[in-house]
Length: 440
Ligand SMILES: Cc1ncc(COP(=O)(O)O)c(C=O)c1O
Figure 1 (cartoon, rainbow, N blue to C red):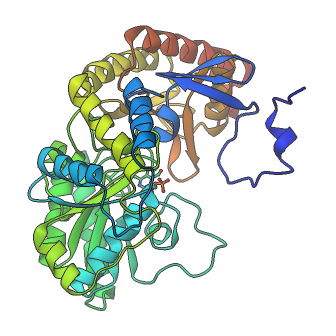
Figure 2 (cartoon, rainbow, N blue to C red):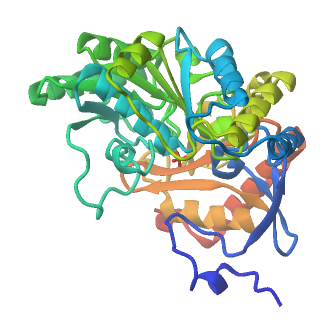
């Protein structure tokens, strides 16, 4: 008899962090994932934010099949035809400005490594400015510039990393009349301190267009414009980490398009592979020519692999054919409306924010104190799961308790309605068991 509980396998699995559900899972289609007992859950995290066109979309299944008929893998010096095709589509149709040259690797962390290596080689510098609450990955360089992931216990991070306090309109570090003024005041102070400490070897400023793991924070446009200027003034490159924001999730082609700011390097991952391990980094011919002349390398076993590229091309075609960017806006507005209606009935929902289908809901014990309601968030998330809704909660003492809600762009209004009613029922039940005074 199969044991369907995770504990049964703990003897053989490394526990890699995060909340783990108690059951084992077996299949996924569209917005629905199933466990081995056949119980269905609405997946309002799109897996790990990757399944933007829905789990196991027929176009992805076909693409994997096609790769099986052609090739999964080559010697890294043999560029597959499909990789050349994907590079052309990404460069010509999706990237801002003249970011027409791309490299295709596997994970978001790797994409950050590539971007940092490019910036360091191009500028001959090593100093990197990153935002508080950022998550750019877990590998050496990426972990060094990430402030939302666990940094303690792994030895010495890369030197030369400086933090810009993240622009958080709900919890500003430096309160001001407007969110924009608060964000710009943070930046001004951070740059002053950076200039004071800098060894004059600036390489890059890296930022997520929506600071997702840090609480789904949408910076004011003026802040992103100011980052562009700060990089230019110091001869540094501006990197946008578009792991979550590229290819439609926020209702535009990219975060760069939303802000009207063109960086020098864009990293892409989750939303390109549709659930398979595909990541990419795009930059300009001018940057690529210079680093190539300086012997830039990022040579791995799976760089330019044909299997994920076949899938990436399929994902981009589906986004166009099914009009998913417009759908992200439409369904995003519908979902946000549902969340705001719950907010009107419950004082514990402090803030609803986000863009397109990347939304954040911040839980507080009450709206005056804005004390993060960590216990309430955890209990309600668990109750949602028991009722068939999978959601992700980020709990950080310094940054609040925030649900990150991001279903596939193919989500239907019926699925949203069901999720909203599960959420409201779960919240009501949690509040009966956990008085607001114990919700923190
Ligand atoms: C914005 C962002 N960048 C980079 C990464 C790292 O990607 P991966 O987990 O594929 O290495 C993540 C993952 O959560 C992310 O959200």
